[in-house]
Length: 622
Image (cartoon, rainbow, N blue to C red):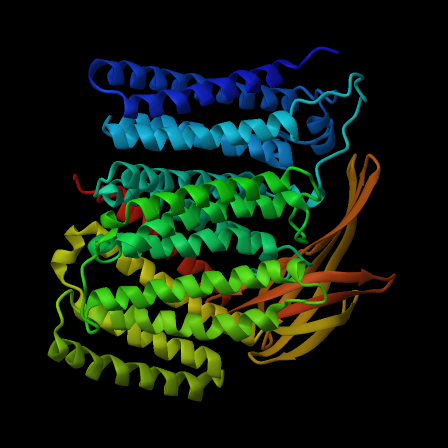
């Protein structure tokens, strides 16, 4: 059996990306006309391997569309009856395809970098490092995760896509996360190139790339949270699962990097190491999902390639440390007062780094130390104080000017602190939920400072306006998380008879369920039981929901999927899933989740603020 054309394309892409790495390095070490010619060859090689990887990706997609089950990857993640949308999203459903997607996005970003960045030694070095990263991922596919591996004999029918992945979120969540991962490579490459060349100003060019990474990671985390929230058994919108943590870790460090870039002259060494750590964490995220060493409901299972990612992290770390020690003079930073915006930014960055460290410890500790089990209790204990401090700093930081001005700061605090205290008291009296009251009080404190420091002229400064929007979004998320996590009501085994009504007592009053219809719908690959429920709140019809149980009958795998129905209003969600069914009744699991809508609204504002900062106000020229 000969090699598949797709595998041959990967071989060509590997050597083209290696040549691009070499050519750009040689161009930096050359002078005059030779440097220009060599750099041009590096650019041509970059265009070539990017085109090859795009063609390879399209070829794999074609194999899925024509149901070529002789290709092992197509066999394991599709079948003849899979619809078009899920067939296309199945391309990145497994280890091999998602790795090709990684390389695809990084190649495209390298081409964009070539087109938009100025052609100088720093760009050449950055592209050399980024091309080397592409080489690494292609090498992993060539050796351990070949998406074009064939059986040699067509099995005739596919194994079928996991029913849990047959959702609209599958089409959006993985691509946005992987695009965020890929974009995090470029700030790291610029940082390494800058210190090697003993140049300053790399942060101005890295800011937009870091922001692009941050935006797509934010979108991916938001979509993943929503996906987990509406999937019964995944632990709600955030379960501190290792794969969930994997995308959060670089998001935290890139957030710190974006704050440090605002005042690079005060945080030069911090920014350098944050660029490396962010890159290392996106590679570590890939390790988590592919090694199988760290258990997760979202991981691909155990594979030998996992250790290659740790080797890449180690090589990048040793290179970063060597250049840092050899170029210490580049990292001279300005001093700042302990009562200044720079100091507030420092505290902000410190809390983000501490949060990263504690999440990382919780993620890897069960693997490193036998007998240790890390659950939500650990994260609640260590992350809650950090989240409170961070939310307080959102307000405190904005109240401190770039120049120390104690009188103005105290004037703001005389208004914002009482405003926060009043909100805390009112919320506690009206709702009686302490943690929500605390989050609301801190939120009003922060919002008051933002509003009092806002000027109409700030609307022309998209960078500042975008930051305000992000901060407001974070505050809303904090309030929503406090309500949803601390005051979620769970009612299990709620029995409802056919044409009968069952009342549930909740914090928000009575909720009554009434079955109006129950039917079974048979499809070629599955059978669905659909129950129609009227939901009443305090005697008033709130809405109609249709939770379902779906029995999938796929090749060698039978899966039962419980689909939830959600009724939402600004104050709570009523979340209903079928537990079991008998001849004359059904049992339901009912959740009443307070303020979870603020999590989604806040997430949208966070993403919108990032987009405003990136699109409406491009980076300053050096």
